[in-house]
Amino acid sequence: MIKLKTHTKKKKEGGKARRKALRDNGSHLKQLYRAALEHLTPVDAPLALISQIQRSGGSLLSQLFDGHPQIYAHPDELNVGYPKKYTWPEIDLRGSPENWFEILFEENVIKHFKEGYKKGHKSEQRFLFMFLPVLQKKLFLKRIHSIESITLRDIFDSYMTAYFGAWLNYQHSPDPKKYITAFAPRLASGCENVQSFFKVYPDGRIISILRDPKNWFPSAARHGSKKYSEPERALRQWNENALAMIKNKDTYGRRVIIIRFEDLIRRPEGVMRCLAEFLKIRFDDILTLPTFNKSPIRANTSFEAPGHGILHDTLHRYETLSQAELDRISELTDGPYREALRRAEG
Image 1 (tube, rainbow, N blue to C red):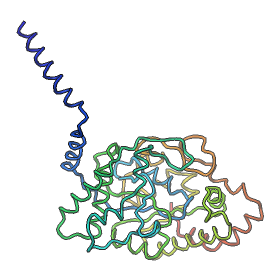
Image 2: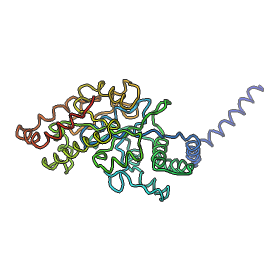
Image 3: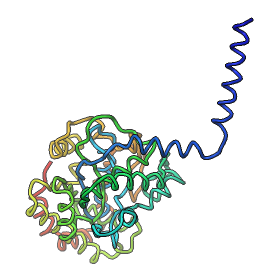
Image 4: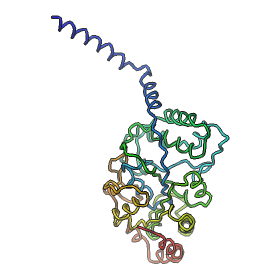
């Protein structure tokens, strides 16, 4: 009988605690913020920036890095450009931490949190993306205010710390991280952008993907962007991108690598082994599987995507063009393409 009373008392106490815990009074959110702030994990690895003209495999490569135990993989386009999207952010160290955060903040996290993460506007595949922007700002300010003499690198490290800290369901391993990987189209096509990038990340790396213009143009034109719908204008931009790759490689040497899109599709393991060596990370089979937060993800393509994995159909986009169009592309791009190919690795 005594045991029964003791059990009943405990059950009643447990019920009271349960009712309190289930009460929606905002206390849980405060506890979450407090726990995240108390257990803040610094993210101070250098950035490996994947950057070239759009429709060249940047999304695919970022998905291949996703899930690697030595990588923090940014899941979307790195949208920190300021004052314009394709400009490396200009940050005044005399400014306020709140202003620095506003400059770097990526508004797409709000949409992904509300609607689920999806890659490309045509994709029907969505993933849970538990991300709290308010928490991100709190984490950023906490880290910044803990630093006495702030540098540009401190600001970016604080931003990355806050980004991954506010991504509550991020599936990462406890292994020490060598790099953060992120895709930012065209950011490495500007000389000043690259100079500014290496000023912040002297230990950073740039990975650029060179895609055969005969395969690139059909994909770019079909994607719906007006800037690539007119062939002559689109191919001028392709040339500018290829010339920028050449200049970056010649100027920064081993901190820059150019890989061929076609190699990445035909023999992904060989190319990813080359990139693993470039970043000094160990090779892992997950590097050959496109994923989001370790879950397989469909390709971000302008054409039909029948399933998961790497799509070999991307090697045959040129077949949608006439011979006259193919000849014109060769005429306009042959020189820059050949020079960029000479510098490609993998």
